[in-house]
Length: 171
Image (cartoon, rainbow, N blue to C red; front, side, top):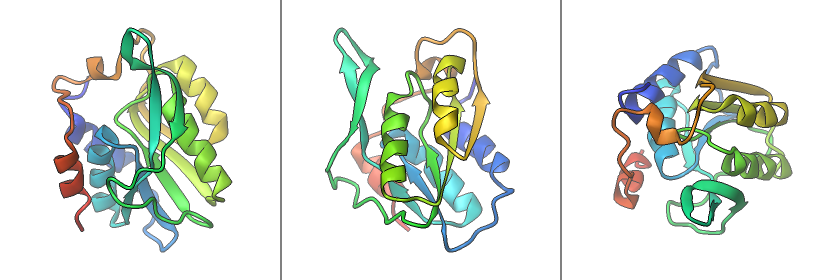
């Protein structure tokens, strides 16, 4: 259990210290909760932060559960940085079904990212098992056996507003 996204981000950043800052390394976060995590990682490693626009397609009657995901063309938080030939740390505040992260990974591969490192605080084992073969490295702090929603692994899990995301993305 994490106190809040900030704690989860700091714990993930510690696990990523083995990555030496270099020109080709950047963090891409899935809005909105992933940007809170991504900002801490980017600041700790002193590397750029950007967003990647993967959006879940909710399950009818269960809006927090993804039936699928797709990439969207929004520019709400600025364009997704160029990833060709770069090492990308992909982050979100957690994985449930894995569909959103999977869509982002497919996009990064299509855009020829050199390396994809997934860094998330929590994921169910079955979702991680499907995602892990798609990335070069996966850093996941908790893989609980029983899982119903990402928010159950945080003491505080408020919605992150667009305004907060825009503030976090300021250099």
